[in-house]
Amino acid sequence: MHPDFTHHNPYYKGDRESLLVGMEESAVTFPSKSFEFLRVLKDGNLVAVHGRIQLTPDMPWIALMHIFRFDGDRIIEEWEAAQQVPEDCPNENGVF
Figure 1 (cartoon, rainbow, N blue to C red):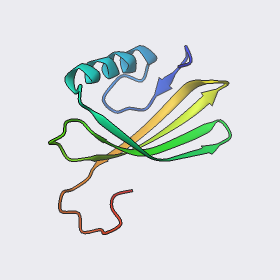
Figure 2: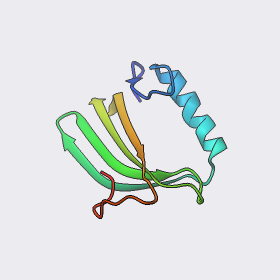
Figure 3: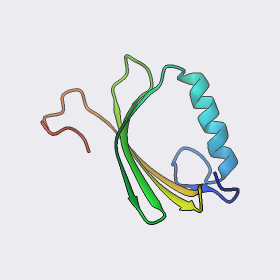
Figure 4: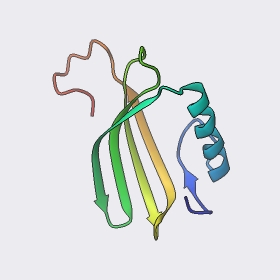
């Protein structure tokens, strides 16, 4: 992570330290969290990661999209969008 890292996660302040602390707390709260990568796309200094996350084995999956902007080999900015996958989703193609 770049020292000037900023992010757009709606649950934390936009600075580097707040997100690091939040992710550490999440790892303690959800030690069995599972993430599955579905797609990774790259365009110049931008990388998009499309995946899904399950915080506990009995919770529904959450569709997740991250966009990272790089400065050299370090992430300098991150955007995030998430959507809980409804259990009775009528769309046969799934979410995202």
